[in-house]
Image 1 (spheres, rainbow, N blue to C red):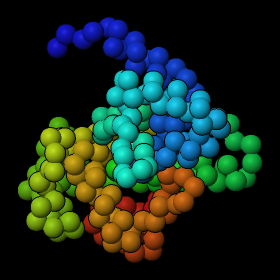
Image 2: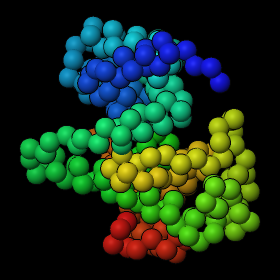
Image 3: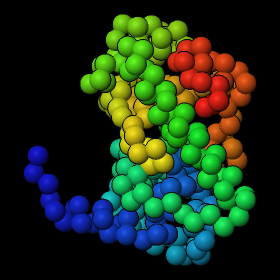
Image 4: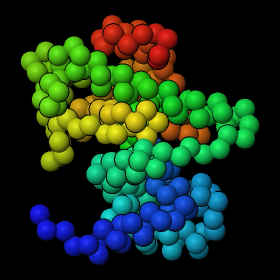
Length: 230
């Protein structure tokens, strides 16, 4: 594939602003945000937000969705989320902790969080490792017969039928663990199942999730995840 260097340069420019990066990080929770919500998250004015969003739209990192008279912003695709998470992991510099509240939030994000439409953090990495160690995925990320049985047992007969052209299985570099967690279609299936079954409860103020007692039991039974981890 021949790549236009200018397009890579434009992408780099879009991510050169801490404000735009903060907006993309907020959007990693997988929700649709209003421009006003993103302005508050990034600590900038509404007019400034519009300028930043235009830059992100130009490089297809975000998408604008309209519903009636309202407009919402989302990450443009799983690939866009993958770029943001990988860039964060590569940069590797955590925000300074200045209070007990911020330390607690940091620890919660590191333990278990949402990365667009899949689980990340120590829990996400442990789940990915378990799938390979238990023979549900091969090292080259092929789903085995036991893996098919596992996902169909927890998510139904259509668990392995992608709703789009996205890969069935993909690894995503975790920015806190610096190791891979599960993404792709099956990563989304696992997150959706965990939510629907009450294994996890998303927090209101961050991408961190809380693992319920039922989730602790399920992750241990299905994947061998130690209760102390989840």
